[in-house]
Amino acid sequence: MKHILVIAKHNQAEALRVAAGLTLLNDAVRVIVPGPLAQTPAVTEQKEVLDFAEVPCEELADAPDPAAVIATAILESQVLYVI
Image (cartoon, rainbow, N blue to C red; front, side, top):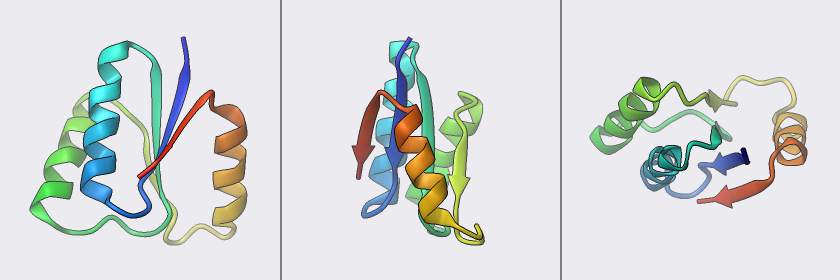
C-alpha cells in the first residue's frame, strides 16, 4: 500500500477532487491545506466526499509550524501531488 499526500495549495477544489479519485486505488491518501479551506460550493462538495471516504484533510491555517507539518508529511509519503 502506497502513502499518497495531496497538498491543496493552488486549486483546492481540484486537489480535493484528485484526492477523492485516488481513494479508488485502495492506497492511503492524506490531504494537507496550507491555510483555510475556501468556502465555495465546489470545495464543500469535495470535502464531503473526502469525509465520506474517511480521508484525513488537515487545514494548517492555525498550525504553529505549518512548514514542519508539511515537511514531515512529505517524508512519510511515497507519492506527492501539489495542486
